Length: 284
Image 1 (cartoon, rainbow, N blue to C red):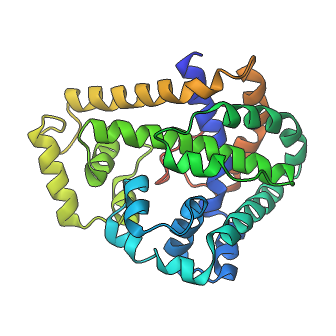
Image 2: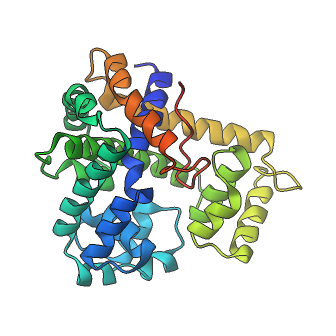
């Protein structure tokens, strides 16, 4: 599997998944469940497949967020809504959002879902806690909700591998965000800092630590070594994420099925560009 194909597919299934963070249907679903505020909805809905886990588990698995932001949402979220109810509601809301954005999404799902399901079933959950939790869920009966669940599973499979690589390279959550900002226009710095809840002092300290490692220059921009490290991490992330995709005889068939959905999400305005998720616009 060519890793460039893996990266292209990521830019396609990531927007399918990302409606859960930005679409009104998904935000409203969390509110109806009783989850209080955007961030309780975010952490509650994304972590729900793991069950009623502690804030320490969520902070460790999500990696880039300040632990205090997590603690303000978890474990309180589980007192308002049981994880198993959140799992159902998030898939239903995502399907509603995708149908609003692209009324023809059912036709695309008919082609894409069997392929996505094959990849999810072929993937190894070892060392990938958030993916493994999603992989173990029952597939929704609704094909669009099931396609969203499959895209979410693959997104988290890639994310788990990415976090493992970041920690292997000795990058803590704040440092990973700083390096991403310094090396990519798709990772807006102030937005990342605020959304991940790092203070200006914590951010500045991370800049100093990375500069001390030679990864940033005197002005806080990425050095050649910093860009090299980031490129290495991204390339290894692609390589790891390519393994389950080898279950497909024709990855291009999946890409063609996902393209109209990803394009519609991008054009809808539901997913802003740039965004704190770090996903770029998919190639047209």
